[in-house]
Length: 260
Image 1 (cartoon, rainbow, N blue to C red):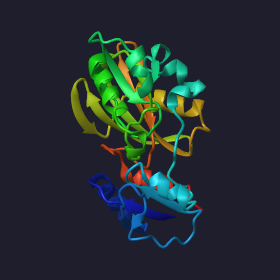
Image 2: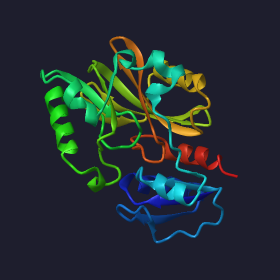
Image 3: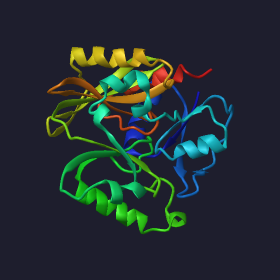
Image 4: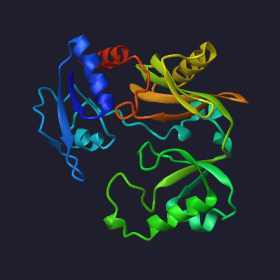
């Protein structure tokens, strides 16, 4: 498989794993707002290319018909097999930026907010409804034609849920329906990156992957331990998700096997 990498700290770590495996790769920059790569890669086989870097790489992959290219994924909250396991999924509020001023009261209440699409427009975080309304009004004041790709837009659909007491959070890498590596990335309020996972959490992740084998050939899933047990937080595009303390050699080898 031909690997194209955009230069970041994380992709340098991935490159080290590819070096150990003897897998060739090339470095590229993404032209802002256009999505072209520099230098332009010489593609040997459009059906055997893998890209890692920023989420906007999907535009280049799609324009040039590269496969697998970038594994774009559907909104996890709309996937029926996972809905019983979502953190506050049943109580979520779904609003576009355009709908927020009229549908979200200004009371100072806290919400966990993130885009429904895996588009990286806004990181998931806890914000007050006052802040959310101010954010929406700021975006709505802009002319839609002037908003760059990858930014919040008038029609960006957001999911708002009640903040939960989370004890631990793990990132799980799933390739071909199987958990291939994992990383603890938060313990209470502390950000910690360790290549470990509780046994019940690993089994839970494997169960979620097996419940939905056709979701994507490769993706990232975040799960957490709460006062109400293990829950699924979200899924992310594997090509653009942070690696934390994952075993990148196992990950790279697993993805490379998806090629011809």
